[in-house]
Image (cartoon, rainbow, N blue to C red; front, side, top):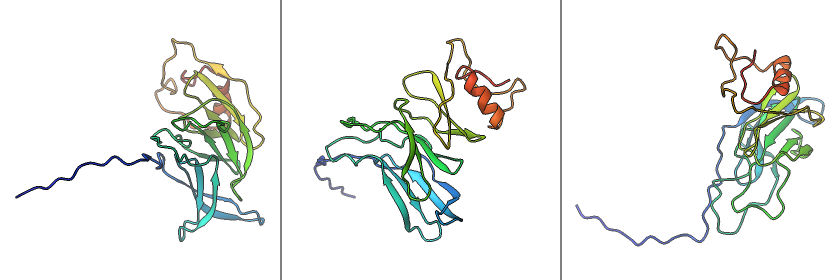
Length: 200
C-alpha cells in the first residue's frame, strides 16, 4: 500500500465558532399573549440563536458582537458558559474574544424571548461560568475574582456580593453530603455566603 501526502497549507483564518454547551428547550413568551417552544443556544461566534424545534427554522438571532474577521483563534468566544432561562428571560454570562474586541459588550446580559433584544445588562467582568437560577434570581461567577454575583432576573437589580475566604471548601453540598436544589431561599443564602462554601 502506498501513501501519498500533500504539503500542509495553513489557512489565513483560524476559528472555532462552535457551541460549548447544549441548547435550552423552553416554552417562552411569543409576544402575542401566549407561548411557543424554542431551542436556544449561545455560540462562541458572539450570537444567541433561537430556532423552532419542529423544523429548525430561525425564530431570531441576536448578534451581541460582530464575528471577528481578523485571523484569530476563537476558542475563547463570547458564549462560553451555559445560558439560563429564568423568569421568562434568557440570561448569559459572556467571555471575551481572542484577541479582545476594541469595545466589548457588558459581560452579563438578559435577553427578551420574543425577539432576543437586551432587557438588562451589567458589567461583571469576563465569565466562563454558567447561570444558576432559582426563585426569580440568577447567580454567576467570573474568571478573575472570587465574587458571586446575584441579580433579579426580571429587573437586573443586583444583590449583595460575597468574597470567598481562601480556607473555603469548593463543594457546595449540605452537611449530609447531598446537593441542594436551587430554591429561592437557598439562592438567597448563597447570595449572603462566601463563594464556594457549602450550603447549610
